[in-house]
Length: 322
Image (cartoon, rainbow, N blue to C red):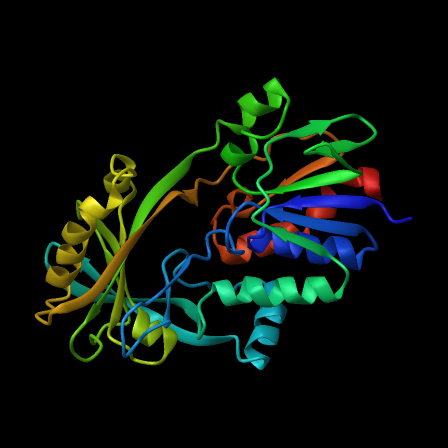
């Protein structure tokens, strides 16, 4: 009988870990507390015609590729029409001057980045993985020869989440203390629809601004040219505004309109909070032999690619299964 592994979290790192585990012959169950899979691949749907039900990325803004292993996965997604190349050039706003910067190719997804998680979970289900969404885990206990996840026995468990979240469910005080040291930074993400054509910019880094850090043209990111804009705040702005977030929506939108010199009316808008939007690069805490923790934090440059690759390397932490 194959060894059983619980993966807690259905974000990118949890999904790639589940692929590695099931392909290595283990029985895998994925638990996720959210209503939808994908972790920080946040998505909202517009409510009003003519864009009713159109998705808007409100979490991770895009992804880049630098490693062959992830490139192979991205090429697979491209062949299925799930993702596309977007742009390698962003504008930069600083001191009311606008310049451009060129970097790696950024990729977007027609149906939103969450569609990648949905696709991959469907593929995992075909491989026999059990996927349990809206299953909040409150207790994980190491019993030396087994791990109890809500009193269900597994041979091993993978925490696919920030260490701060893992610290809330691991029933080991020393481990809780170490995991809770991980630094997670918040962001507020607002979006709005304007009554005109899509703005001319693809995206803009906003430097040294008290409110805004990044503005994304979601119509260009999605390649449908819908006049939809996504605005991400600075960490410092979000830090003290995680409650009653609707109160700050107009201020965030107004700054976005000002920076992009948009004069059109806003016909729809919304906001969401990410209390753990960005995880600072971290050293991986030493885990018990039947536990692993994966995520983009264990990289010099936390991002979607780093999350995927860290999940793929999950068995390096679970030598007890080898």
